[in-house]
Length: 69
Image (cartoon, rainbow, N blue to C red; front, side, top):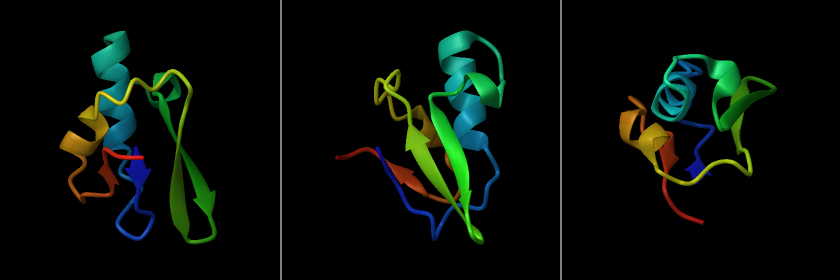
């Protein structure tokens, strides 16, 4: 998964859809994508549990995540 910090607004939709899809509840702490503050931008980290289903990319309203290596 590839994250574009320039496009990310920190809305956390990626985390909500990830946890809902995999764990049945919208809980960012369960998500396989973690957002870290890097100055004024956020950077995504994908945990080893990420299966690259790309739901985070599909539902990102800003196009900040895409599938790829």
